[in-house]
Image (cartoon, rainbow, N blue to C red; front, side, top):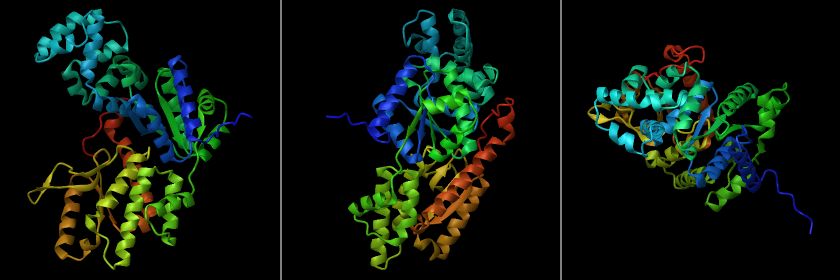
Length: 434
């Protein structure tokens, strides 16, 4: 019986390629995985491969080397006590048992910590890992710089690759987050590939991938020769793009009645390669809209389905993963009550509100919304309001608007003077309120 060659776009083939790439990394060969296809499909495959490894992941636009490493360090710090990791690294160099130095440092004054560290630091090996230990174990250094990352960047002479290698050396290999860089368009892919190649060279064991659409990848591969281009070609995995018709058939199994108004949103969801979870939430939302339309009722129901759908869509997309919180408070009160926002991005200072039918049929509700908008604006937030009914009928318009505003806020954040303090890499202190 002839051997059947696996489909190069199948999940089984893609997962096999991811394993092959990881084997190369474990051999010390710098390896970049390139996921060419819809962003949702790329993020879904990447998560599925990482899940049994229990490895955290960081999805970030490849704006600059510094910002990518900043995001990586912040992802790591959310799940681990970096000071404890630094103490264990230093303790091991001094011949102490795991956990012994963190326990000895606990509860000591800054002066007592300094005395103990001065005794132990000479036993640490030379290099950036020891420099990172000094930063992470001296809170006054971090406080002066504004954050652990900024302290590390300053200590490593504003070289983000040295920061990456130093912090990577302090943590167990499987605890280090993977990186999924995003890029759309030839210019963005060129920049992302250059950043990724440098990251791979700085730390060959780094688990890293680039997600981009196939036309942008093809345009990049037709450029001049470079190490980055060779890595992109070697690590290329082509992903299948679902058809709107296939998504429509899945919706029918969820009880959705086919209609012309679903053509545009289904085309957008297919182009983005949405996961089954996102499609199921979309189906629930459409089904409820269709029921309300048949019964002559307004679409409201506290907008919970629309909110969950938009949140899940944005969180599953590599370019917007982790940006928004669902039903979150920005941390201030209005009229004696905590303010709550449907979708809140603290990092970019964006507040998204989904308005139902009754928002515009009560004068007091209208006034309350305007007061809330003003309060958010005074705290530096951009406020976007969308109608609940438009989340189906005008989905593409809403997603495009969100994408444009997110891009504007990211660019504004990068132009902040504090981002330029650390030198030409564009690093600096993250402002607390843009």
